[in-house]
Length: 409
Ligand code: GLV
Ligand code: MN
Ligand code: MN
Ligand code: MN
Image (cartoon, rainbow, N blue to C red):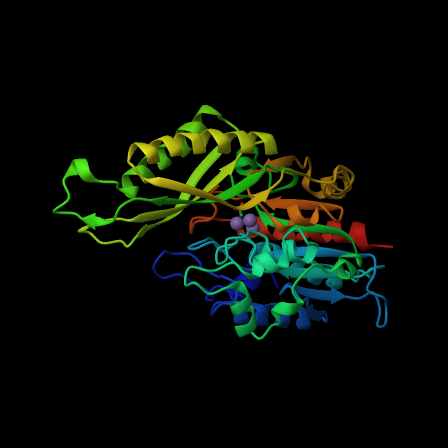
């Protein structure tokens, strides 16, 4: 098969007719068929599938029947998406991993240790707000009880959703025993910028993930009638929110080029044309080069937002939903991968990324590296995300060469 052929098998799952692209979230209607596809793809390669207690999927290629599940090399990514996301962010790393295994099997490669393809749960955090949910639970980077208390947009807790999916929330939590079975993790991923396109190279490794925080802002004002309330008697949280949007942009711009500040999601409550809102809830995403830089960017931004909120006679609450510290990937592992790829691909750059990944969470407990595939549009988290078929194949070949090097005799 090909990577493109594998992706075509799931092309109809979780399509979002309204936003375009894909909306695939934890335990939604696309979740079970995506998991079934994972199982079918694994079975076709003779891999043994199991799901851990944190809803992550694992497909084991054992060196021989009865071999112990130790010293394994894991590779994979996620199958969920942001709302209206692209076809590649996540699925490329899973389809590419199956394709790499297929290539190794086709070439008669006999692994000396298990190779495991994985798909992690809710990497984007689109339903419950916590990115890399599956790997955070698995590693203990997130506390299970507080994660299970999170609610989705409909007010359903993660614990409820977990139970309704037929899983046991009481079992959720860290699994050091499972993690102890792995010697390394490598994630193949579409690049989420234009760096490789500009350099004219199909694949790279990753040097680092810049740190990233998410905060929920709750701006409360005074709900009232749009026609009878004169302009001098308003505490309109939407006006304060306008100041907040401006503050996020201006502080990030003042800290260019490293800082990024985004508000990509907001709710106006109650949301009526002839109603002065009583509350705005908005989600703010801030990123910069170091953890301290993100904290400082946050402090300056909140100071500006608070001023805008007070000027409108409203009040502000700020809740941190997640913080992902800077990740510097394993230099020794990345150097070995680079050496394995250069005979076929020529110079392979190591590039930093502004996007979060399960590889970042796993790097705290395992030697971890990433391989990026060129994206001709440079767009991601939107339907315009792209990767050429031949570059997807190059990614699978690069991953196969990496697995051969890591799992070979
Ligand atoms: C996840 O992809 C993120 O970087 O937000
Ligand atoms: Mn993503
Ligand atoms: Mn991703
Ligand atoms: Mn991500």
